[in-house]
Length: 167
Image (cartoon, rainbow, N blue to C red):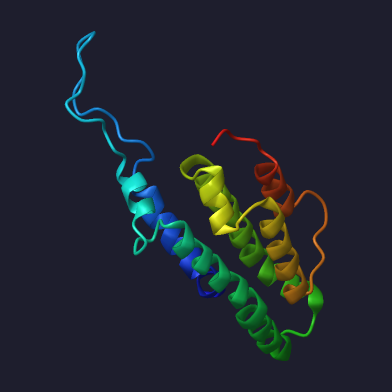
């Protein structure tokens, strides 16, 4: 429930994004030398161009801003309520570990979707990159009040954010 409260805009985007193929293929195979009547246009490309669509870079930027706001407002509220009932920091850490892990997984998936479906210019409009994601994870850690140890989800986010993919 906590993960959903924080990540709902991004999880919604990812569900819609993953339901659509990234590239449109030919409906039938063409013979050598045969030219299609019209070039195929990927449905996702059409959605990205529509300002009212979930896939438009501006809408994605607003969804990301909602997630950042939730990490700054909702997560600290949940942590403070939990401190009333669970006083031991180690116990809270155990309970929040899956939340942190879910957030790291979702933002990694978001970054992969951006790198595979959006151009560099579109990603600049979205304003979501490895640095921003790393900053979000630091805010999550600060809100939870738990230091991570050993190889963490942050390492997996960092490895994804450092990946250089062609646009």
